[in-house]
Image (cartoon, rainbow, N blue to C red; front, top):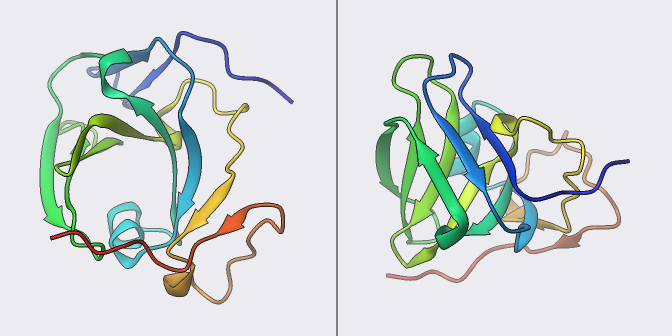
Length: 141
């Protein structure tokens, strides 16, 4: 089992976009909302929440902005060349970045402490009994 060391980083599959984060994550989570399911093409998204001030980006990702089930406007950034999902930003909280775990160079230290939007979780997903379960998030408009 690994522990997160800072700085940590990641990027896209083709290498045109890279990022580094100079502080440890604020939180680690799995989100089961339908928007995350559609965005990932899977049952949920696994993510680390970091301070935007500690997030350094090289390259030029594209972003697609949606209004999520929570009512929050979410900009989902990805590589336009290879399609790798990289991170999201919330219009309601620009001080944080939500990094997609699959884009990390080393994800062995990822340990989610919470499962969000569990009311939308697919019935065939087995969630870790040790994580906090949150049925929904408050709607912000």
